[in-house]
Image 1 (tube, rainbow, N blue to C red):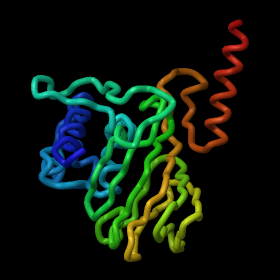
Image 2 (image 1 turned 180 degrees about the vertical axis):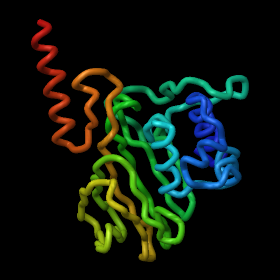
Image 3 (image 1 turned 30 degrees about the vertical axis):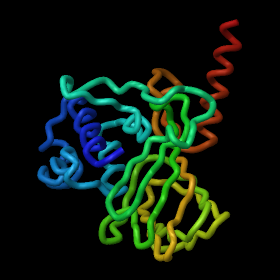
Length: 228
């Protein structure tokens, strides 16, 4: 996905929510000019800016991967563009390229509106998740596993150097930033668990941890058994 496609999808999501560019920019604490440049593909957002955008528009990262836009409809409803099969082929994986040499590839999912975002993240040498080492925060619990390269996680006042085979897990509302200070790309698998299912009732309780996700599955299975 190039910057023009990404920008168009962000704009479509914003319009579908009935939000103006200026109001959205104010909510994001960025200038309307910057948001406009992101939406027109003139500027690639950083990881932190993209997280802020999807949180403000109340969509998932995977919905952003999946949303299709047309010239005749400036605000289409998100709909799947990838087949919902158990296996997603390498060539079918959608990709978002961002500022500072960071790219995300969407992993296979069953429901783009579900509570889990799954990505393969690549940080090129010198890349960072935000501009000028600015820390970011977002909803959810972040799980990661580094496959290759070296990546530094700065979490609050502590720094952790991740090497191949290292994994992480922390509350994403804690200020954090990722930086690749190495000379080779850092590649890892990331799962962010933390958005509320759309259903009403008990199932609408925010899923913030894997335990919450398992509890939600147990409730669904229990309801299914009761319905028999």
